[in-house]
Image (tube, rainbow, N blue to C red; front, side, top):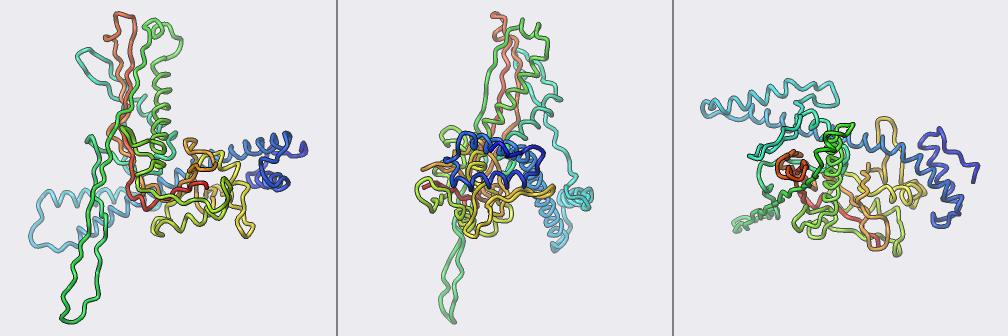
Length: 406
């Protein structure tokens, strides 16, 4: 297969070569050593396009969320303007309406994104009696931004800030029912059944002792290095917990049993991949959630299964996108996360649905750094203590569906 060339080709061209190779042997497991090398090389080339695709998907989701915020503000303003007046409004009520109107007037509706206020976050330092230095805020802005970029699945969820140790929201567990009523017939009673969702906040933390000599003699900024490295580590752990968290003294992850998200089992034989399952699962969630829906799986499932699969009409399951539109699988965009299991018998390698409607990611506060020079001073060490408080749990579980391999 030395005649296979993958340099300087478009995503679609490489895909055609990849599929041609896969079709020639029937299944990926039948590839010879040389064919396997060519197959892997073409997937590596496609993965270069994938980074740009995932960034495009993330930007589209952010635009959708901002658009929803704008529509919500406009609806509130319209309701306030149409509200019948039975007397003069209080100064506080008038101020709320004016503030809302002023916010909307600052929005440039000719642009695709909303030019609202930028939220500035700075790392904070606990000012205890033992002493400590305040962390420079320019580190916070830079590193926290990197962390958000790493945690792809988090950006698709409904991210909420809270000032409490848990986030609690009322939930309509059962809707009321209306009955046909005949003349002079006694009316039947019905009322909604209410419930509550409680998502606890947990602390992620780590302590890093560093010798004073190393801090003094290092030729680079060791503090900045530690901050950068552990910011990424925190982000990676957030993503893992959002998917795999057990719910026992930690986040309640997407794949954890008991979170209300039901599963569909694949239709083929044990371990087999069936393209039709990616279409069937879309019918398992209410249609109102489909507009913002996405698939979630890891890169191995993408390049070993999805990219070379066809449906019953011979159409490719994976379709390349363009500069403005992302790649799609079964007509829907997708998120890659290496925390998702590989495709195999008994695993749950795919989740589909509207993650913004279906799952909460709760943030109590951002990353906090304490530079403690006193506790370990007698041992000639400075201790960096880093922590963040956050949580995750279901919002409307009906908006999501898991795919389990038979």
